[in-house]
Length: 197
Image (tube, rainbow, N blue to C red; front, side, top):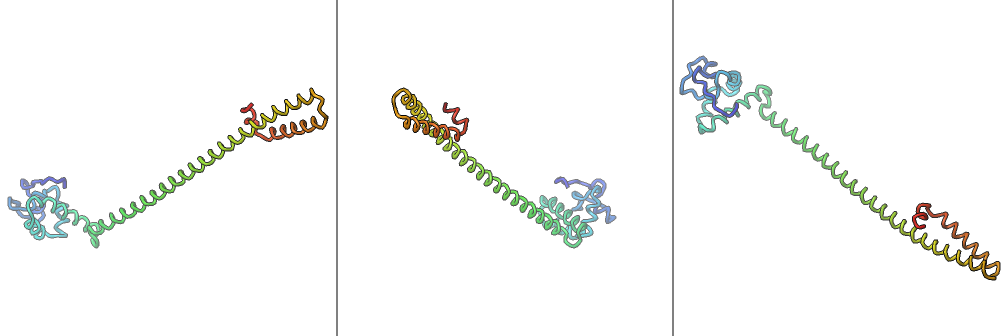
């Protein structure tokens, strides 16, 4: 039903037609069961009976009757499709679906939480690696600076030694230190050395 009362008194309602009686203004069912809804009335009559429906309508306010008929039709169709459970079967089915989708949502939320935690952990790992590389690069630069200073010192000492009358042992020591320096320079990354020089 679309929420509006459909007046079927002009041609007689489905209820009166089904019972083969004349439909008049006293018929409680004509606003809700026009001839176009005869199949609905047959289901309602089978499960409730006309007398029971009239009693229900007489006990409630007129403005409540439309919703009451909707409920009666829904229950009758549910009982027709499922004679054992009726509307309760539909309710249980919907509750099962709700529970299923609630479980699905819970699983998805768990996966989202795991992904967020993993992303956070990876971010911290990368941050620590960057900090370690930065510190390593800083130490390398300091070491290169010191080696370059040593280079300048040794070169000046060698030059002074070659111009003076120093003993050959002093020159040998300076050359050995210079070789040690070259070895240390070769052990450093080439890019670091170039960046400092």
